[in-house]
Image (cartoon, rainbow, N blue to C red; front, side, top):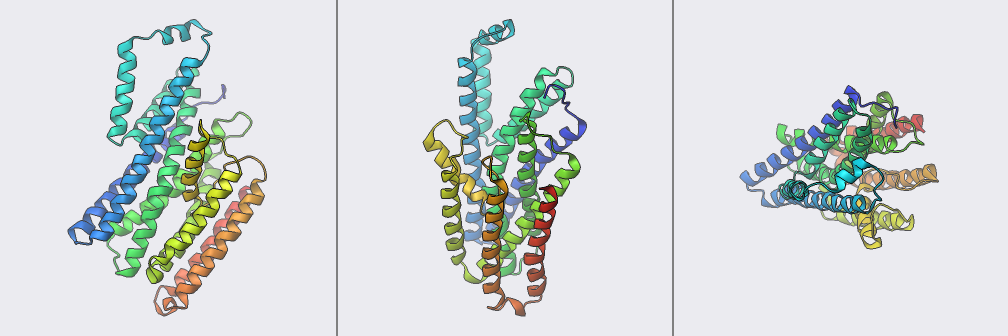
Length: 348
């Protein structure tokens, strides 16, 4: 890690992650107000729920991690004069740090604050290499938070917007833009975390930007196939989609708990964390444990393909084939899924 440098491409990629996060939230809020203006109060309520609840979850986790990191830094033995000076920093400085963190999180700006800190550490590392490690760990934390937010906010929003577009033939530019931004946000968030995780480990080679682009393509097609299947099924069977989603989420959460992941300081928080990560598994595979990665990935995508096929077949043979987009949807649900899997295989 000591020989690595913070490049312009790194800065642009971090900026890209921050702006997809902001654009996703802004377009979803605008869509929510659009439904409110059109007196679609139920859709308006769901849209805002999928904005507010994930945002509160992100702020809680971010602040909790800040408190944990602060406690660990105070428990670390003092070894250098620089650390001694840091430990005896003024009360006012400490008070300002805590106040700024609390304020940004109350204002729902925790992720933006962490993105800015990551960039600041990155640019500082170009002058002093010691800041590179700070940048790496800060980026790992913000991309993990961003990943959770994307799959609890962007993914449900995407399914909801697709459902509305199919159900009421709403192909307006705002709804379409919101759906496209949400899809891009999902793929970006997942691969940004993968990149950050590789950079934080000295035993792993960093992901190049060509490989990163290919990985984003893989995620885009697989997630799009999943979202289309869920959206079309919901347009025909309504609340029945929650049965599919609920069963899949419970199974995946139990699977994660069984893997004994280790991301939180207490077992209770770890289980809660796994229940949130289980939402990610509604749409895409996400490796949470070393060992048997290919077997777990294969098992997951077989289950997903079977679920996608059943949901799409029920929609298609119950009237979907009569619609003008029935055949294109069929091609993308299966063709897009297999194209994404083939791209994934090139990376294994």
